Length: 137
Image 1 (cartoon, rainbow, N blue to C red):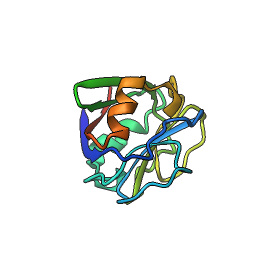
Image 2: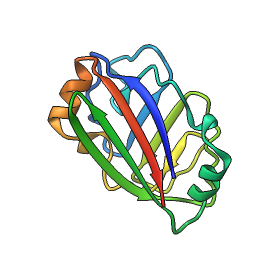
Image 3: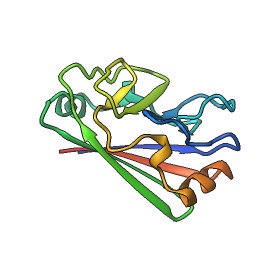
Image 4: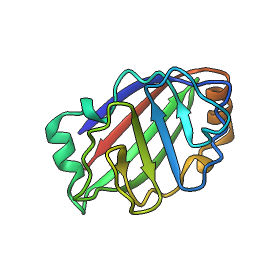
């Protein structure tokens, strides 16, 4: 099962955060937002199908987030969690930890923002259009 988010990069995308990565519906980004990969997302976790949300709430679920921009693609895999709500109307956050709030779309991620490849991050920093696919199995 997949959910697809369309967003865009921004000049302040730095992808330096060590424990999270984020895609937001906000239309701005400050240099402090070092976990944010893309802004102006056309969807948030609150828009995800209830069946998709239920699948993510399985502790044995494998969740993969694939970010594609300007011909560069990177995927990160993590886990589902029974407490995942996916109800936030603003941001989707992947976490390397087990912390869960209404923005969390995966826990136990293999890496955070700082693990995304240089070429992808550079494309996002140049404002490239981004496609973010969240898959659960």
